[in-house]
Length: 72
Image (tube, rainbow, N blue to C red; front, side, top):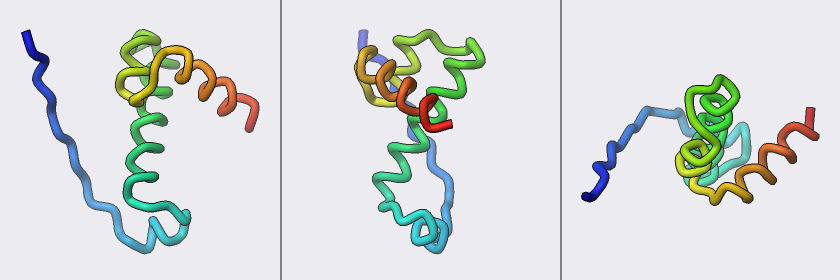
């Protein structure tokens, strides 16, 4: 059985992207990762589901979480 995909969109002013020096695709990727990290840390998504939301494999997601933690 094929999973249904839901598309979510929201407006972002172009000056925000210019301020953070990111392309639309980079911004989208970062928002997906940060959302996955948030829901994983809150216990609302498993590691596997959070990695899937972020568009990473489990190991890649763990590596990126560790890098994110070391930046604090």
